[in-house]
Length: 224
Length: 224
DNA sequence: ATAGCAAGTCGTACTAAGTACGAACGCTTA
DNA sequence: TAAGCGTTCGTACTTAGTACGACTTGCTAT
Figure (cartoon, each protein chain N blue to C red):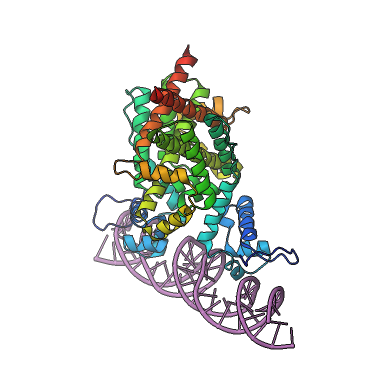
C-alpha cells in the first residue's frame, strides 16, 4: 500500500480521503453535485489528481456505497435473531436516510464491496442460526432487504419533497386537486398525514415487526 | 390540443410518440443510453425538435415514470381488498421489472404525474374500503409500497448481474471467496440459490402474503 | 388558390463534465 | 546530490444538454 503514509507531515491525498470527501459533498449538495472537479476543489487539488486514487467515477461511486454499508450497526452475535435483525434493519434505514443519495446508487452499482458482502453474510448467518431451512432463509432475506431498501427510498423522496421549495409542488398539487379527483388522498392528507404528530418513519417499525412476526410464525410451523 | 392530429397523413412528432420512443430506448439499451440525440435518431429527427414536445430531459423522465404507472393493472372495485391489492402489487412488480430503469428513476423524480397519483389514490381507497382506520391505512400503504419498490429494485439488480458478462464479476466473487470469508453466502449459493429450480421472484408472493396476512390480523384486532 | 402566420424543425454553438496524455514535481533511497 | 518513481497537474478531446435564431411547413381565412 504505497498510497498511504503514516507520518502526517503533509496530508497527501489517499483513497480514504477522496472517498470521505465525496460522501461529504453528496450529503451536503446532493449526488448530482458530485463532480470530479468539485471533488478536487473540496480536497484542494486538481481534477486529474483524483484519478490516482480511484480509477474513475464508477469506482468512486462503488466505494461510496461500501462506505454506507460500513456505517450500519453490527449487533452482537448473542442477540436473539429477531432482535439482531431489528437492530441491523433499523440502523440500515437510518444510514440510508442519512445518505439520501445511497438508495438510488445501490440499484445501479453491480460491484459489491467487502462491507456490502459482509453485511449480507451477517444477515444470512443470523437467519441460519435462527434455525430456518434454506428456502425460508431465502424468503426472509429477500423480503427484509426489499422492505428496508424500499422504505429508505420512499423516505428519501419525502425528505426531498418537503425540503424543496413548495412553489411548483403546491401549484401542481393544487392543479391536480381542483376537480376533486383524488378524494381519498385529500382526506388522508388532511386528517392524518398533515397532522403535526404524524411521522412517516413510524411505519418502518410497524412493517418490520409485521415481517419479523410473520417469519417467526413460519419458522414455528416449519419446525413443527 | 393542437399538438395531436387525427388524420394520419404524416406522422408528425407528438409528446406521446416521443415518450414512447424514450421508453423503448431505455428498455432496450438502458437508461444511460437515453440521450436526446439518440431519442431524436430513433424518432427520425434532430435533437432540437424534441424540445417542442417536452420541455427538457427532466420532464421527459417524469413523463416516462407516469407511463410506467399507467401500465399497472387496475383491479375491478368489487374485489375483496386483499385480492385487489394482490393484483395491483403483482402487476406493479411485473411492470417495474419490465422497465428496469424505472425504479431508480422513481426515486429521483419529484413531480408526480396523473397516473402515479391515480395509483396512490386507488390503493388508499382500497384500504379505506377494507374498513381500516386512517393510522392503519398509513402503515399499510407505506409498508406495501416499500416492499414492492424494494423488491423490484433488487430484482432489477439481479437481472443486470446475471445478464452481465461474468468475467469481472466471477473474478470479483472468486477473489472475495478465497479466504473462506462469507461461508454462509457460499453455502446459500451452492445449496439453494444456484439450483435450477430456484427463483428469486417466488419470494415476492411470499412477502406480499406475509404483509397482507399481518394487515388483516391487525384489522381484525383493531375492529374488535 | 394564396397570403400570412403559428407551429414545428433544425444548424450552430456554448457549457458542463469525464478523462486520456504526457510533462513537471517532489519525496525517498543510495 | 542525483536517480527513480509515485503523484500532481495543464491541456485538450469527447459526450451530452440545450439556448438562439433562422428556415420550413401546413392550416386558415380570404
